[in-house]
Every structure is written in structure tokens, then in C-alpha cells.
Length: 436
Image (cartoon, rainbow, N blue to C red; front, side, top):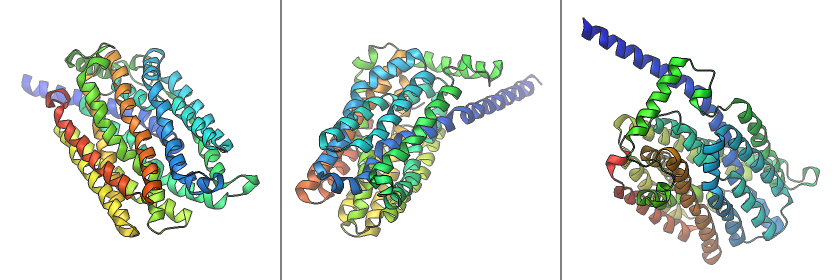
């Protein structure tokens, strides 16, 4: 009888826990998702603006690649200080600050006239946005234990492909339909219109985002205890990686930064060069290009949710990054081979987008699995900062090689190999640290 009672009590507790996390997810994930949708749209809409901007301003592919990439220099320089500030002052105020400043700077891109002003605006945009992604990833560790974090991280990061599913057609429509309206070029309207959602969302975050579990009013005392106890238990199990200094002295953190550099290279090549690649395959209409860019990202959303659900179910983390990384490399290679064959280019882009998106979302369960406290704040930011150097390197190198060879193929082959190398480097991370 006691065993039956105990089993029933355990099931009831499990049911309460499930309902608690469902409530948490419905409260915080949609808001963070929509915010990242706006962030990523403002970060990569320069890829669509390029279709008109280069001709209007007389920029070369190298100028575009450097300008698109210099965003990440500002981003990297201010990432760790930004995340430490978030850890100290709270997510609500700091994410609000990030969103409002990046919205204003993104809108100011309409005033770009020369390469120098282009570089300056993109650099400032990187400074403004620094800390948003690692800040949100850190914020999720305040609410979800590792066994639940993979699926939640994937849900949040689906904002990247989702921003392209909606942003691609929207950007194509703006370029086509608003070009010349009120004396502004289509690319100027693009930056102006797409900055508005982020500006509005900054004030929404200020009103609705809660800093910590203890402060919320929408959970019962029992529900707060469940969430807090799960996080406290996980923090005790982490192998001493909680001091701020350990984020900078741990070889595992620096290795993760190198791996993320390889993963992020694939993400940013697709983000910044997808419209150009489709145009190079023989599609000329901006709206049609915008619609075609949505296809790889639709597949990417399905892939990244499936991969991370399986990772949470099996508690296996490393191979759920390795295999998608290899698929990314294969997709980039197929894209490079496609030439003017639009169908083959789309096959390659679908593989690359699905692989890169799945690898990225699965990757972010790794540092959070063994870093805690201040080390998590600094370590997650450091890994993201090191990885996002790829945003500068990949866009600049592909732009430079495109000017040199009059084709994107050489750059795609190079980064296809890098994606595979990054995946294999995961094997250097001990399974005991991350398979949770």
C-alpha cells in the first residue's frame, strides 16, 4: 500500500512539475522568441539591402563583406562586459537597453552614404546588440535544468530561420514596392521599416520580463519552489565551474569558442549570402528571391526542433552537434557546385541551413551544462564572442574571394571544410561534462 501511495505521489509531483514548466515556457519563451526575431532581422537585412545598395552607393563586394562583418567586431568587444552587466543588474533592464539602442541604430542605416559611414553604423549596431544572445541563454539557465534546456533553446533559436521565412519575402516586397517612395531608396525603407518592431518590443520587455524566479507573481509558491530546487540541484552538480575567473582560464571554454566559430561561420554565410547565391543561380526578381530564401529555413526549423528533442530524450549532446555540422559542410559544398542550377543550389542551401541551425541550437546546451553562476555569465558570453568573430571573418573572406574569383564557390568550399572540422572538435569535450 505504501509503495502504491508513493508511486501516486511521485506521479502527482511529476504532473505538477510539467504544468509548472509549461506555464514558465508560455510566459517567457514567446516574448524572447519575438525579440530575437527582431534582432536577427535587423542584423542580417543588410543581405537584402545589398541587392540595391551596392549599385546605388558604388560599393564593391569587398566593401559589403567588410561592412557586414564589422558588426561582429563591436559585438565581440562588448559581449562579455554586457553579459556580466546583465547578470548584475537583471535581464529586464539590460535587454530593454539592448533592444532600444539597436533599433535606433538600425534605422539610422538610411543615412549611410560612403564605405566609412557604412562601417561605422554596422560597428555601432554590433556594440548595441552585444550581450543579447548570451544574455538570453544565461537567462534560460535561471529557469530550466539541463534536461529541459535543449528543446527550449531550440525553440528560442528558431527565431533565426523564422526571421528569414518572414523577413525574406517582407524584405523583397519592400525593395520592390517602396523603392523611390518619398524620395527614399528601397534599401533605405528596408532599414527604417524593419527597425520598428524592435523599438516597440523594447518597451514590451520592460513591462513583462521578470528577472528571477523569486520575483514573479504568476507562479504559486509551490511552483516557484519546484523551479528553484531544480536549478539549485543542478548548480551543486556542476564540477566547480562557477567563479568568474574560471570562464577565462578553462581550456574547455576556449575550445567551445573555437568550435562555435566553425558552427557560426555556416550560420552567417547562409544569412548574409543567401540572397546573393539565389540571384547568382539565375533568379532576378527581388520578391521571388525573398520567397525562395524562406524554403531552407522552413526545413531548418523542423530539423532543429527534432534534433534537440532527441538530444533531450537521449541525454546525448555531442553527436547531436557533430552530425548536423557535417551536413552543413555537405550543403555548402553542394551549393558551391551548383553554379547557375537553381534547383541544385536550393538543395545545397536546404542542407546547409538545416545542418547549421540544428548544430547551433544543440551546441548551446554544452557550455550551460557545466558552467554556473558568474562563470556561466562570462563563459557563455566569451564562447559567443569567440564564435561570432566568424561573422566578421566569413563575410569578409567570402566577399573578398568573390571579388577575386567572380564567384562565391571558393569561399563556400573553404567554410564547408571548416564546418566539418568544427563538428569533429566536439569529440575533445568529455561526454561526462555535457551529456546531462
